[in-house]
Amino acid sequence: LVPSLQTWLTRKQQETRKGRAELKLAERTALWNAKPENRHLPSLLEWGSIRTLTEKQKWSEPQRKMMGRAGRVYGLRSALVMAGLVAVVFAGVTIRNAVETGRLELAVQNKEQQNANYAKALVESLSAANTADVKDLVVEISEYQQWATPLLKEIVADANSSPTAKLHASLALVRNDPSRVDFLLQQLLAASPDDVPVIVAFLE
Image 1 (cartoon, rainbow, N blue to C red):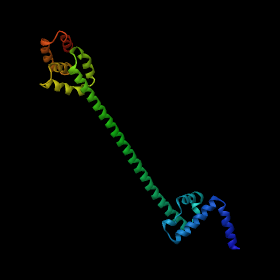
Image 2: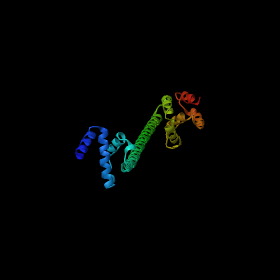
Image 3: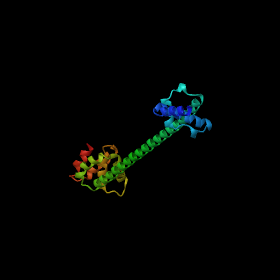
Image 4: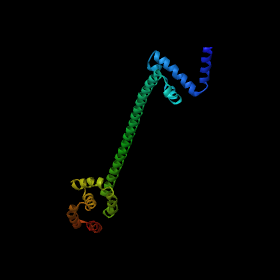
């Protein structure tokens, strides 16, 4: 009669979630007490189900020990997983920031090179232009002054530069380099009638 009664009670327990959790607690406790190894602990899902559906006050001492051990094991594993996730996220953010920084630096370098190339083209056009057409070129060059100024100074300092190239470079420099005024005043003495108004305008 007793085995039949036990079978009936077990079957009744299996009909509810709470009963199944209590049976799993008893089963895992017996297995773990026989050989207290982590592989005999309830799975994380089973551990959570037992904690949620059974009454802790009714646990036996072996059950408390087994559940406590499982809690520490899963707590440690959760902490390791969380640390790993944090490390992965941190690495991802670091890599993304490095890529973005590299992309921005490359864009700045490309823009810098484009400006330098365009300034060089403007200076070359200035050297070959008619003096009457210099004003518009100088206005455009002023927008790229930081790249154009070294090129203009090279033209002025180069003994092989043509007089016209030196004149036009000096006209482009005089706004920010008053030392070019004396040179431009000297050019007035030899300038053609068409060039004089241009030089005077820049001197003003």
